[in-house]
Image 1: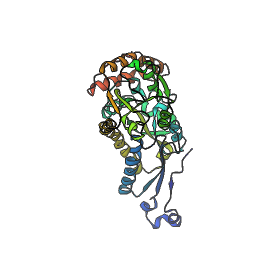
Image 2: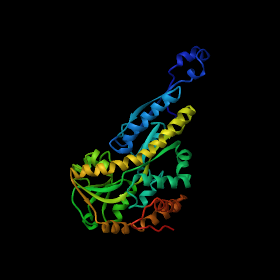
Image 3: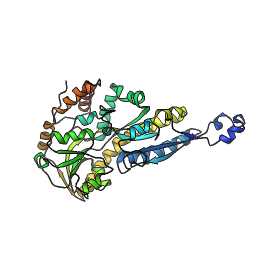
Image 4: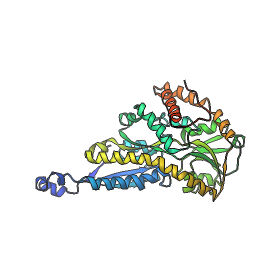
Length: 358
């Protein structure tokens, strides 16, 4: 479905004869773009879409072109739910969408590759650098959006470092045995391999489901625990350091993008690149502040490194299993996972458990 992209603000004048006004004026249009995510703006990347990406596009287009851009917002699932963003952008229901690849296990099974390597860096800027290195060397990761899903990948999105928030205190992996803990997509395997009962969920329903004891915890970064008030049903937050994951993306409907003038296209790509970096730096800055907020509000515990190592060892065979399965689907999984391990080390990280993938 091709979206209705713009309103010709000078259509009446153009109808009288564009030559009377000059080509640059005749081509001046307002481009009205629908933007959204299944996540609320309390989630950092969605908040940055609203507070950074949108106003920067509006400002730069107004300053540097004869056009204007405006946005119709659809956050918190008001247009597309968390599981519908890829298809929503593909079909033109929204023009620009922010999504977690965790909800696209069948369409984009390899794009959550950092999640297949848990206990990586907790620094979102390093996580983003690692992902950028891998994407640069594996064009498939970018090209598949245009070739299969009628959209352009505008930006990769880093998350804050993942820890574990719960309704109860715990100190070792055995304390979590048979407890129901929520996650999204592949990170459910972090739980299952550790002997914890995984429950698929999303942040849109997290507060209610924690409050009603559908599950007793979440694998989650501290910003969400603060912004969505998950500390109320979950007054224990444990700094275990599962890692910061770059496994979200910002995409744009390809038909919509191609209808835009080249100068507007260039600005959208420019702002998207800046937004990508912002997801790393803002999450990094927010992490310490949000952890301190939680320390002032609930019980925050830093786990014994031995517990982290034990949990990592319980997952040691899983990355190879994922690589083998995805390689069999014709995807470059072994290459991607090894490139990410090497990129992390190149960027100064030492793995507590170095996964071997052949």
